[in-house]
Image (cartoon, rainbow, N blue to C red; front, side, top):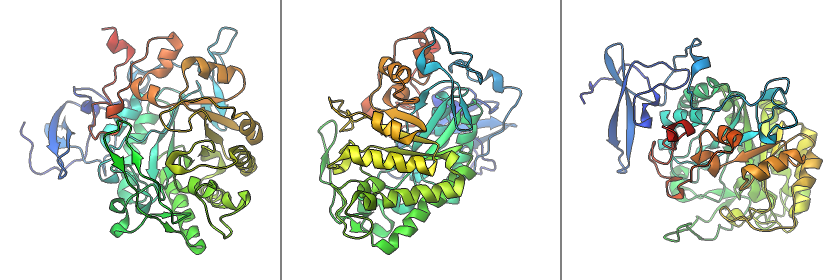
Length: 459
């Protein structure tokens, strides 16, 4: 394929699915694929679009979608049908609990199946890419809620390769067409913002410096899921108390940038052993100042971040994810019940939109175990929209909603492998199996946008 050396326009399409096509809300006249190798030797696909008799190549930092209001009601027939309406029209004696409508603050949701935030490591150079628009739009439904993958609040917040950020103008502009693609499907889109803290390494830090944390003790070496490699972590630098306001401000700025990019709100990642969790858990936080010691002090940083973000974008646009019962990245607490209740009450008082809690049975990322603990106390203490996550199936998700245990249920691996998950739940249809080996590979198609829809399987 001949591509002119000078690229004058910035356009892109959904053709990274491996065939010509259109992305919901975006019109294109034709497309081809161009395989390309990065300096690191990774091969990925450029989308090459034929428009106005010219071939142009995607440049994700500045693409601007061309919306078509006349086509939005006919976009992507593979997506789920609406599960309800503003008046709860889907509800009734035989209604499937997960598929009943729900009013979350100012957002009217048509069902309760939420896309959980999932790190996918396909944002080359920490800049969101056009193929992310395909991925998220595939999983978007009219009135559905999607939470974007964990997105760094600063360069120093990074801990993994090719995860997106929201601290530069280039990143903000790159997110815009992705958000537009989701909104074209009628979905609500929140962005999870994070700081990895000590769960990082020198290679991801500015000038190769040490990552920061509540402590100067490193995460212990971790064996990969397949047992073939071991990750070691840098020795962190303990943040001084007078440095913490600057980190709080990074969260504030990232939240403002997310709203500018078009997101409906942000979810603050205070879970899974990352920076905020490193302050919350007494198994990590060994400080003796106002940010350490007793429970209230250990929660101070988290609540300062939440207050700053809520003050910037409005509490009605803020969610928070917590995992008091997990021990990811060695972040364990001696009294997770007390920690969860304290944070739930405080977040309720701050009036944030929702609390997203990880089930106690998920002490480790890939293990679903037995436990005497429950999220019921946190749900009652918070008093607002309560989202649960942690290896949920269709059956126990329905039970959680029907029993009043949760308002919404977030699905990760099942949604990753089944882009039309709400529709499959509606029909009680078989589910695609996920391929763990492709969760974090850099390919923009394989294991990312190539999972089949029900209508594909029936052909």
